[in-house]
Length: 467
Picture (cartoon, helix red, strand yellow):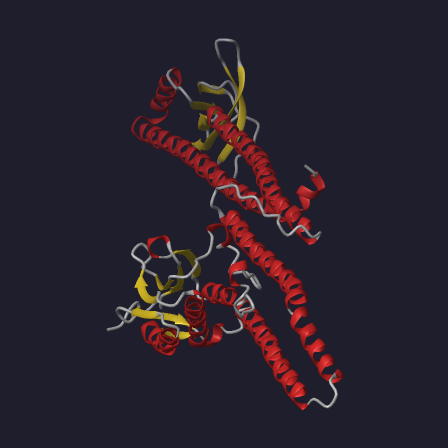
């Protein structure tokens, strides 16, 4: 891994800042523990010395100097960490377990700290002591103190532990920051490499998911969905361009040839009129194609999202069914509708009406005389947030291998070439379904014959149904 890149990464810097704050917190905590422990031990030691002085003073009051000397001699034999020294005014030794009066000067409260030789099994050792001194009757000096060497060793151990803790915290913080930054950088590098390949023209590339479900995986999943949408739109644009060049060239050529032939006719008013009529029909077909393409583009761009509102889908479907029922009867096709209970959806009335009209128009167009077409409005048992409009016919159906592509622009199967159309009807329905958080499903009709098309839409969030 590139070290300079790691050090410049935002993740490493954030980890470093967090480590500094954490280390400062640990340092403050350890300093507090050290200060509290050291202060407590010092206060306890001073309190012990003060208690010794109080006891000795009581002995002095009750028995005088002789009694004081006896007490000092007695306590010196089993002193432990306690220190005693009684000397005359000229520092001549009288009693105690210290050999000589320390040279250090006492502070304003008569406390002093000094070194003294303490006899041990291995020989004398230099220890630190803290004591209080005062004069007795102007002829004697008394020193009462404690050996604080063990206390100083504990304080030293705490200080060393503090330094080690700070060092270990810093090292582990740096290592943790480096590992965290490296992990994040590897995942971001995946995103960057994928983005570079996409910018180079490979729209099929997708960001790999780690399966952890964390925020990076969620970001990658959303980016992949966005890339899939971009790829679909780009492929749709390419397909539209190709299909326009292919499908619109023929009617434009026919119009041109027809006008040219009419111009070659000598004084044939009927030929001119017939040519103009057919040209107008061809132009209307081209205009319808461009209008359908414009509608699909507007839907996919989300330009009509602001016009969505709560709709009674049952009433909408009933209005569309009333328009197409006479068309079906004129062709000798029975038309049945089962719209059930009123259901609410959040959507654009014109788009949903046009989509349902396209489905019914296709069903009637491709169903033979004497067959039947049905329309149903249903809830989906395992998906309570969705509803579906189901159009079933008895026509030739669509082979399973072609069902996925019939909703693409300008796709027309061989069976439908004899019928008028641009191949944009189902493409519009599919786009409308997507903008309404739904989908278009195409399957077999009843008993495996004909076609069953389901326009699935999201229900209104606050009003699942009405009565």
